[in-house]
Image (cartoon, rainbow, N blue to C red; front, side, top):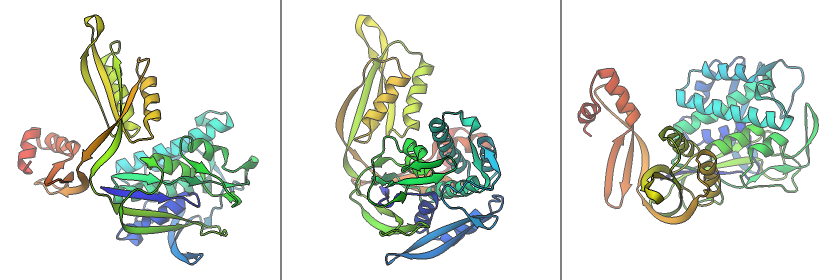
Length: 388
């Protein structure tokens, strides 16, 4: 299992995440060239080697019309609405999955800003340099995550800093209100370092990609990336990304269940998809015969230990149940990795599973279905052609 561990002992910002992740891929300069070719208006990225407290790492300088933005520098710039940002992202030459993730991250930032300012999301506006800088950070991180494709992302407790931060509305406490809202449910801490260590963009990216928060898992580290922040503190201002492999095998998971006999199939399907969209390891339904002979369904969900409260809340929200049962199970799983399979019609995505003397490869069904539609074949015929 490929695990990405993000160590946020000095917080997180979009450029720090992008810099750290860029050190994990084979061609970081090619990534920068690809970002500069996207056509973001006036935006240019540059990788710089930086040393902080004796540690050599990477800083990604993002300039807009030649200016690199400082945190919360809101003066003397035009403003853009969220719809403008969505249109910018939609127009970029990126895979659809990357654009969807980038839009979702940016939407979460806008929702957090709207909630803390007591206004509608549609009324949130971003100043020109800040918005384009954040779009570059967000799309860059989403593209890198698509290149790395970890099976699991674990984030350390996030150091948010202390004191106050200056923004357009005046002096605000650290973490800034939008950052605090974005990090709800994640372990965070302050400290004696004065300053804003975690930005709203950094917080939104961490929450979007994290499968869990906590200590570094047992793993064989293969690559380490250091993403350097722009400011200097008494401690090395860097975010460390560690990519490694963990042996497949036994692990604890939490199973949640609830019995239902008064929901339509459509509503139940919506609830199950909501659990999967929120990052559940799996979700499914089982047929039941309930009291008084009523047919029913049992909605089941698997999640990581420590996340059962969040998924129980989703089950209570999206179903008619009055209660959710939870218990811990021991699960044995194969190692999985993303692969590319050659077919007579071009490459398709696949997944290789190994362990316990087992080795198998399975193509992504969405790609198989696409080929079946394009070639006028059945799914079985496509699978036979690619040796499945």
